[in-house]
Image (cartoon, rainbow, N blue to C red; front, side, top):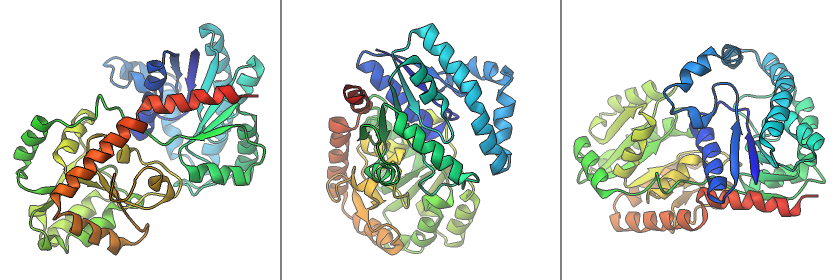
Length: 391
């Protein structure tokens, strides 16, 4: 089947990984997939040496960057007006490529995809990662309008793919008469995320942690990920477990404050902060870790890093939000603590640090789970199965 994957994201970070994962999963099943992205935001071209130059020359590129700093009311008006551009681009792509199905990563106020699909009498599957029904980092200005538009979009899609059961239940409760839907959390590419003992030992030697237990964090240093409070509490207890080292990979708003806290606590010998690393190096650092930490999340999302750690055979300590419980079996494929209970998180880490055999066993189970159920072609199979139930 010829599938058009339409999205209105910047195609970076976790969203870019997810888009490419689903795209490659569909191709593994034999489907022809093309991406329709914002100018300069095609994840497939992000690694190209020539695409950045092309992206900078596009007349819409500067405008799209400007919207990041616009007031919320103006940003949302821009989102609404972009439907005209999206509708035109969708119709042209559908015609030129003889598209048989549209798969769209849902964005607030984005009606163009469903309108185009109905006009062309094509099925459209929506992947729901965002909604006006949940608490967002950027609160909505036109929330009532967003909800009315979202209800219409959901009800007129051919099928819905939710990233968690919590997301699905919230939508079903708020909007009646929804089309068939499935719950499809994130996935991982085992070809890219795979254990490599040689790579692991080489980096551990470079870092000076050959004989240590390495607890890793990879991601943005922002408050809602909880890494600030985790380090703040953990540095006071590190002396209790001299063999434990924190390996923190990433950058962000809280980075300097966390770095200062480590120095004040005199814990520099047991905390390594790498800063931002090139994307291709992150796998090496994952290999060097023994287990991972996810201090906080939310009750509807599907954290990408959870799946990447598990694919590498590194189980994670994570809060027991329902989307994480759908993926992690406590003590078998990871370790859960009561969400919001910071002390329980710290105590869990301290206990696990002394049991290397358990770390390894649970890590192996985590990778087996990804191999069995959460590779990207599994996601692709789920979403294509919705076409059998379209009206």
